[in-house]
Each structure stands twice: as C-alpha cells, then as structure tokens.
Length: 130
Image (cartoon, rainbow, N blue to C red; front, side, top):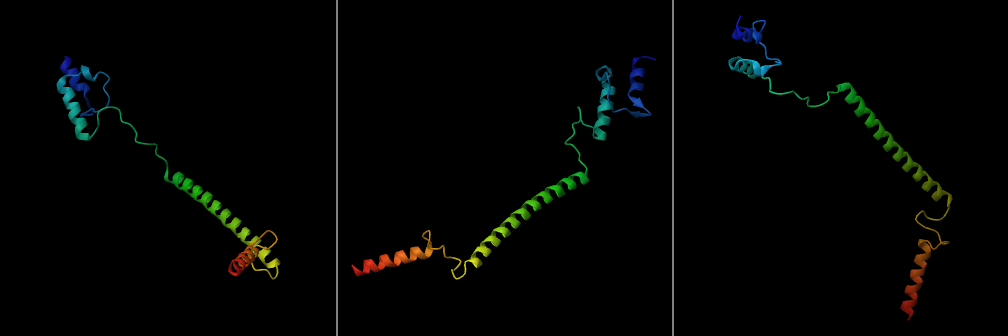
C-alpha cells in the first residue's frame, strides 16, 4: 500500500467522499482535497465554522411571555380607569351635597367664579358712569 492508496481510502467512508473535518487536510493530495471540496460544494456545506444565528426559543415560552406582558398592561390600564372612576365619584358627591349652588361655581369665600363675575360687572358699571 503506497501513499496514494492510503490517501485515496482516507477520503472515502462507506463508498462516499467524507465531507467532515480532516485533522490534517493540508496533508491530503491536491486531487483529494479538490474532490472533498467539490463534494462539500455539491452538498451546500460552507467553509469555516458554522455560527448559530440566534438562540431558538420554543413557541410556547414566547407566547407565555407575551401573555404575561399583556396581562400587566391590562392591569395597569384597569387601575387607571378605576382611579378615574373614584375621582369622578368624589366630584359628583361634592356637587350634590352643596345644595342650591351650581357645580361650576367655585364659591365666593375664596374669590370663586361668581365673585369674580360680580367684580367685573361692578368695574364695568363704574367705568360707564365716569
């Protein structure tokens, strides 16, 4: 058995050209290297180490995370809605307990709307008289 027979037998496994890793690929004959490269090209094997494009996550886990995120958002929105409803309840309670005052009246004690309207009317009357 000479060197060509040994190298020729080393590239064939089960009667086919082995396209996997060769520890001493450069030690093979150029013709054998060409055969291996041609077979790799035919099978679509790319040169160099193959990098994974990304971490594969199961569909169930992805869906579960999306569902949890949606639940959190819904809870936050429901909280905002309930807080707005309670604010509306306080406003409606205060307006009904006031009795005969209108709801848009700020009151006269601290210079509310009605007091300001009276002040503007009296100033207009004074200006017209002069």
